[in-house]
Length: 592
Image: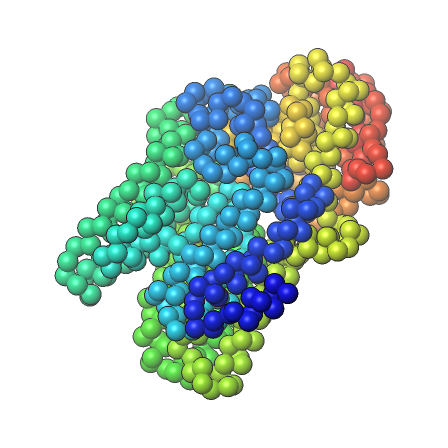
């Protein structure tokens, strides 16, 4: 009856009705997710495997706001300086402080995607697609459903449309309060390394272009907005600013020279650079095809590219003229992704690899989207063939966004909606509760004893150590995005025998280092390792156990049986831990 009543009163000429309809469509799947709670699926990669843990450690440290920046946060790696963690002045931290972890995550997911939808709707309605309410709704929903890792980024990606909306308003002399509110609040729900170095230059270009080609008047409000967002960003992220500018703390990131997304202009001839740039420019839009690009969101840019080429054949100069600025930005950013750090280093503007030029790729989803918007706006909607093809294209985008997510799995919303109706669906994916296995780890802690847990560190084999220290167990290793370089060198002594067995693991540890842990994950068969009924075992694990004890280690928890433990006089097997509900089986060893 409610739906029938709503449809009866629906005015197709009123954009507000389309906006409210979009909010309903976007919000509805979250009802299923909220109901499932801890029994829902949450993305593991670069999410459950470390970001949840960082927030939990920070909240438990008593130093959330970070005024004691060199004080150590306990949990991993014998304590990590507070300066290496996120700012406490971020809405993400507040949500995790108020709500339990799973509901904080769901609420943040909801807020980020609602802001994304609303920002795209307002932007398209005012500046791009004023008279096509249905198209505005569909494209805004596409953007609203887009997948990316929001727990770090917040609205760094989703909020790009609403931020552009606010700055364009200022550029056109609209200085109403909500524009200033968007600009001033944006830094509190985003992350400065993902936005400021890349988004602000584009806004500056927009402002200068407006001054040169539109009106010869300096848009003071626009540039005050730019100064304001830069200043507030620096204040909000003062732990990062302190660590990079004022402290003597040296991060392991300073030697991270593994650049999967870049081409070294010093080592490669120009022909190779041109070939690689053209080849990768096609694949860059497929944010799930290049390692790491899943952070940005997947919109299958090849669909946009094909549509663009076809539209040029049909509309020719009209399309080229309208899309030239966006295409220019896309080409510039694609080139910069692969050459940026090398160019900066060749000019000796930076001395290490801590600046990641390829993060400009976080702008690509929005730019691909705007290119598509401009193309669809120029299409003759009175032509039934053109209109039908446009709807097919939008349908294809919806499919890829919802059902062909970053890791070849459906989006979290789809997986959890399916779980609501069929609990046995997607059983190969651990739920939030299964992944952290708090009950299982409580059994381990009860067996070992509270005093031993507080006193000693653990080594973890077969899964990210962060699961253990989420459960209150201190670990020597970690999947950590920022920690002391000196610690990396000490920990390397523990795993040196294993690194010597595998050149790839040695190369990754040397040039990347986030995986500061025992290199036994068997990447291509990780799903089997996660399950307690897997048939894999570690035949021969070689570690420097003396160095382990020197660094405070006493226990080893393995997700796989270690077959050669009985040949070692200084290691003792205690027992296994599992239960009916557990996803894992844990093997406990002790160093003697």
